[in-house]
Image 1 (cartoon, helix red, strand yellow):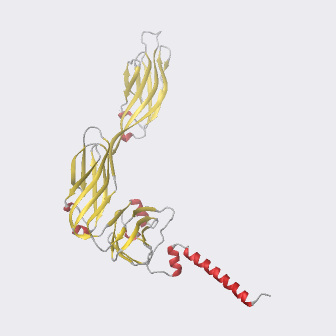
Image 2 (image 1 turned 30 degrees about the vertical axis):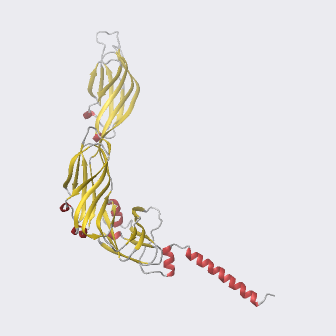
Image 3 (image 1 turned 90 degrees about the vertical axis):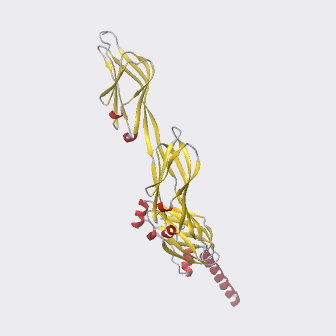
Length: 391
């Protein structure tokens, strides 16, 4: 028979094991679920970690924030690739063509081919390797005679009339009659018949949007545009570059095929509060403009800002409530207070937490194009990571 003391010890051990399992379960719960279970602070949050289909719009390693302002604001702008270039496309139409004509017989082959992009077609050429040649070769394009020539053996290039080309085309080949020499036969043997199409690809200008808050505009002392220019290709020595800000000329000059950093002074009256439009345009070549920044110097210090963009389709998804935009902070989980006023397009969100994470649905605060986030800390704290996600 068991003693009473032994029974009591067994029950206590069982309770201790169950308690340890409960503690372990709570510790391994996600932060937000653990906070909800234990009744954490009263700041409204939305869990945004993980999740399939999320698009990161902005991610920044911020570092230490202090309630001290800066005297310079940088607006970072996405790269611009401009080009006007010819891209060739070569297609073999036939390996061998035999064309002949005599008093009693005739062979006049036809070839069909397709032009995929007529609107950007700059030139089309037919390449013929003439192996045998007797008489005059005649060619029709879509039933229109455009070429009659007596050829010698060798490679021959025939330009096709752009005005006669369609999406679906037919080339017909003929040879002239031997005439009074009724016993003779005129003939051509053509090898490696191919067509070369040259398309003009044009993206000669692009615009970028960035936002200047009214307070920044009021405190504006000076401004400049900086960028790095890389030349992919250029025919000739120079191309013309024009830069416009809000429809007004900011720069006009010639550029050569080189990689270089440049700066352009901006008159402060060309900037406006709210959305500003920056446009780059070239007349030829292929250039990439990267590391583009508008740097505004201020009369009084201000706090750093961060930018992200939403396309027309993305903002439509948000307004139709098919997607949501979340602002996420990863903070030091040290139990200390982190307090700040967060401006999302000049609309305030309050941060007041002692935890290591913060998340807020900012769908109602975002706009199409450039969006700005400005953090004004009330005390010193470390913001390890700032991100904006579209889910």
